[in-house]
Structures are given as C-alpha cells and as structure tokens.
Amino acid sequence: MEEEECQEEHLALAALLRVNGIGSAAAGKLREAFGSARAALHAPAEAFTQHGLPPKLARDVQKAQKGAEAYEAQLEETCERGGIRMTALGDADYPPYLAETFSPPALLYYRGTLIPDAQCLAMVGSRRFSRYGEGVAKSFAETLARAGFTVVSGAARGIDSASHKGALAAGRTVAVLGCGVDVAYPPENRRLLAEIAESGAVVSEYAPGTPPLPAFFPARNRIISGLSRGVIVVEAAEKSGSLITAGMAVQEGRDVFAVPGSIYSPTSMGCHRLIQQGAKLVTSAADVLEEYGVDPPKKPKKKAPAMSKEERAIYQILSYEHPLTMDEIIVSLDGGGDAASLSFVLLQMELKGLVEENDTHGYMRAKRE
Image (cartoon, rainbow, N blue to C red; front, top):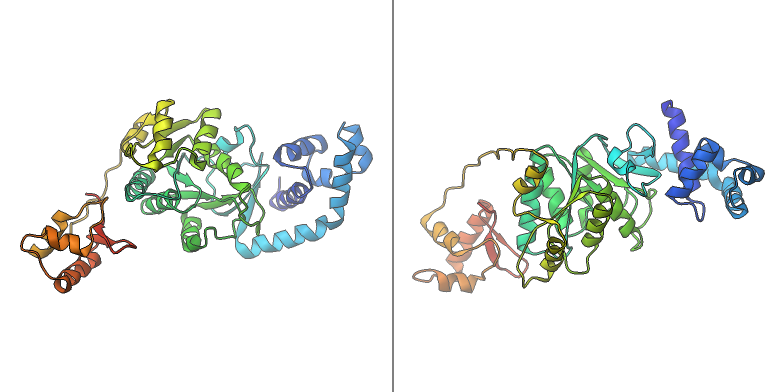
C-alpha cells in the first residue's frame, strides 16, 4: 500500500472507530468484510445487510459519514502539527507481539519511532512507591536497556516513571498512555514524555486530544503487556493496576517476574502474591536476562567523588532507604556537631551527587553502590 493510500486508510479507520459501538474487534470485521476501512465507512446500508451485519450498525455508520470528512481533515492536521503518526493492525510497522494478542488495537497513534522487531520487557508498579522500589526500578530498567531491551511502561507516577528514567540513561523506552499521545499525563511528566519520544516512542490507541479517563487505563494495560515478552512487577499493592497487567500477560502466555520486598510493606503484597502464584522471583536484572539467555552488560565504571573526612563520616551514617533528619545525623556523629556546619557539608555532598534530601528534609545516600 502506497504511503498516501495508507494514510487515507488510517484516517478512515480513525473515523470508523468514532462510531458508537465500534471497537477494534468490530472495526477489524468491517475491514475484512468490505476490504478496507474507507470502503466500510462509505458503504451503502444494503451492503451491510449483504454481509450479514446488524441494521443498527449500518445506521450508525451512515450517521458517521456526514462528519467523517471534516474529522479526518482535522485529525490529519493535528497529527502533522504534533509529529504524530499512525499504524494499523496488518501494517508492516505494527508491533508483531501486540498483533498476536487476543484484542490488539485496530489503530495505534505514536510520537517517536516504533521498531517492530524490538525486544520489549514491561516494567510496572505502584504510584505510591518507596525509595527501595524507585531504586530497583531505575536499576533494573537501566541494565535491561543497556542489554538491548526496550523497556515498556505506562508513564504513571511512581514506578512507571522511575522505569522510564532508568531506561533513558542507557537505551530505549516506550510509554503507553491511557489518553492521547499529545496529552501530558500526569502533567509533571511532560518533559519525560518528550525525552521518551526523542529516542523511543509514546504510544496510545486513543486519538489525539483524548483526556485520561479512568476507564481507559485497564485497556492501556493490555497494550503494555501485549508489546512485551515479559512483565516485571516492582511494587504493587494487593489491589493494583499492575496486577491487571500481570494477569493479562499470563493470559497471553508472556513471562511474569516479581521483585520481593518487605513483608510489612503494603506495596509488596501484590508482588508476594504473584510469586506465590508462580511468577519468577527476581532480585536483579541479571535474573531476568538469564531467562532470555542474555549476559548482563558491563556497566561503565564511574569514578566515585572524593570525600572529605567530615563527608565520609556522614556518608557512613546514611543509608539508601531510611532518611535521617539533621538532628538524627548530629546525634549519630562522634563528637556531635552543629547544624550550621552540618548543613553546609550536606549541601556540598548533594552537589557531588552523594546524598539526596527528601520532601520531609531527611537525607539518604543518593545511589546504590
């Protein structure tokens, strides 16, 4: 199919999907019956009867014909202006792993670059993440990306965002949205989504401008698992959207991995339940790579920042998971200290990337060695 003809088919398919009651499955049947979405969209009512299709469907499509031309023109302009492309089920650039699923989207919108034969692994988890979960997500994602995998996640707050950031540090990542690809959700991830589109892709089955409605996210999850060979759950409560993604992966015969956590942590309960049900327990990205016969990549060695005597004494007290307040640090130091001088030393350590201050003014080590 020529590029112009392909674009026209995509636009017609988008218009067809706007018809009440026509989802991906119904759109697929109509394309098969009439030969194309364009033909189905402009077919006479009697043609629907000949193909054994319900009269109501014919009437709904007839109504949609009136505004289809204007909608297609507007959509085409929006896509051109926003750098948005489309791919339909059956196209050469449509992701093959997704095409094999039970309910693949008839049409995908994306910003960035889709690589159909990319080897993808999904990483999902709680929006209410812990310091531990954030560190695990970044570390796993960076290692997987460095090993050549594309890390797929949902760009939500928490573990999803940490996974994207980790992957961006070493390779490629894909964000699947429950809204239009031109909508930044959550709003604070606008810059992150732009970075993802530069080296990977931002993907959605929803047309540009579609707001992030709650009903869209379970459907979004099937695309996350559908694109991927396996799903890694980092942190998840007992009732979590991440578990929905894991369940969909199981149904599609994809691998499910779970990272264990504290038995007292609510955000680890879902992961522990998955492990009990047969998910593979993983404590490092190397455990995941082993499943696919891939050797862990060698991480570039970074020279550790030099520390003064005072900085080293403070660093030894801090941990990666439990923040300490200024008073707690002073009490823990041999010989104590005063807040003014300690504040200055901690600022220097922050600038060196040795420590981080959280929202409650607690200090932790910045990176796991």
